Length: 238
Ligand SMILES: C[S@@+](CC[C@H](N)C(=O)[O-])C[C@H]1O[C@@H](n2cnc3c(N)ncnc32)[C@H](O)[C@@H]1O
Image (tube, rainbow, N blue to C red; front, side, top):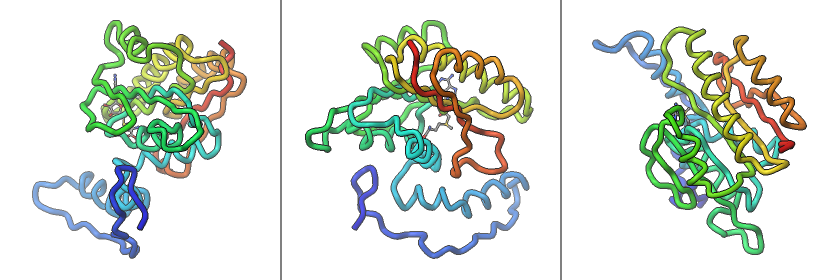
């Protein structure tokens, strides 16, 4: 029987593809009914449950890494905005953080989030507001040296105002990029969530100066109706 990332057996639950209809209920708004219906019918949500990932976001980093191959054995990874831990779960076997791939280099993963994260074997996780004063000094101390990959899925909770959400996410992405400039090894990779919407031009310009290649990608696991996309910058020039 196949194993989940936490070493449990998969049960095959949810393999019949039945569409779930959610009835409106007293006390539930129509937008939360829509959200619930979407969650219950989302194939990535089902896959995450079956395969033991903490969230559907795991499949986004899987798809990005399958394309760009940055999570390699021995890689030192900084995962910003890591809660509840899906990206970390994907990174553990790929970078060989537990040393299970005999003869391959052993990687390291440092995760940071505002929220508390249940421990994940092979990851060192810290609770921190990355936008607080001196956060980058703190993260650098935890890293204790260079990183090969800085990845950020940080997103502030939605304000309901598209432009405000966009500016907030760009601020998080810029802060992650500046830390990446400081800690990345030459040749390293920076991956970050952004929202399409106009203010990311400056960031793209900056990344193009510091990396050999900058790609903007919408992985299949990213919902088609969301303006979310990912920037993948490879070949850090130092
Ligand atoms: C979409 S979730 C990340 C999902 C994660 N990649 C996974 O696979 O489980 C975005 C995360 O960014 C975190 N976040 C937002 N602002 C942050 C900040 N200023 N510092 C640290 N984490 C932050 C949130 O707490 C949230 O857990």
